[in-house]
Length: 113
Image (cartoon, rainbow, N blue to C red; front, side, top):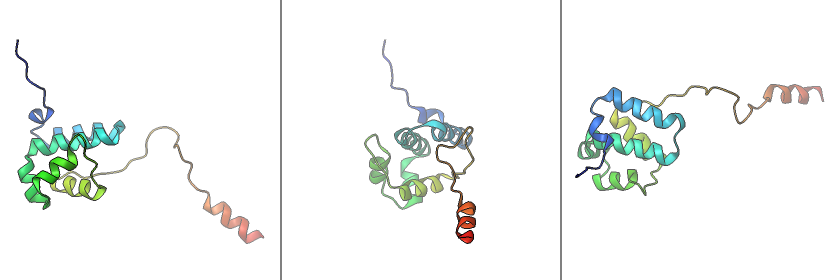
């Protein structure tokens, strides 16, 4: 029996589905998984159209978003903006890995000295 390679890009026609796909990668994915998700969405939209919208050559997009790619954050932002994706921030559940600085306490201690 002949099989074909699965390509998620073929199933991500709607912007809502693309946003959910990327949100899942951003939730707990590695940098490579996030890059791969952006690549999949870019291919679903059409790399040639994305190249026109970003001003980045199609070949450069394939290279940056491809399996061995390591795009600069500026490139990622440019691509996401062209795709109409907005990044947002929300606190994660649980204890933060890095405690916030206690600036107010330090300032109060300096004033007393």
